[in-house]
Image (cartoon, rainbow, N blue to C red; front, side, top):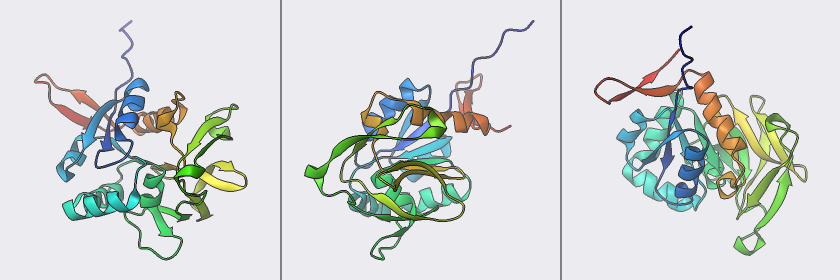
Length: 216
């Protein structure tokens, strides 16, 4: 009997413009992924999925817009690149923002409200019920967090808090209003990584050490 191959190790990019990208990189590594910090549009061709971290969405939008990085992310998502956004990342992925601001990236059929729970001093922790990842609630950390005011028919609600949607998924797009990277709980990062594996997206090294995406 031939030896069983270890699961492939997807390479996940983390948008490293501003925000909690280092914490996401650490969580992804602990959860079993290779990590690449993404600061340039051409790096998107070297990853199997992308994380858009929390931070200041306006700053992320300005810096990423001027560099052309956000336009490249939009094109990559349209071409099927899986993406996971947290807090500001949820705002950037939303198709609609309360108040009429244009979407920064889009792709997730929701309307979000910025700073829905208040400013920085109103930050809090609360258990979020997420049956799809297990019976135990997820330790949600909310920092100037948004919430989802409305979700389109193609959006799967993954988590709610006080009747508000705080985690959602649509196709290959996953988003949370809170910061899972600031906890020791890796379940949501593992859901994203497992999704890459099940879709057949992962990187393998050839004989010369180069990497490529293998699709099943």
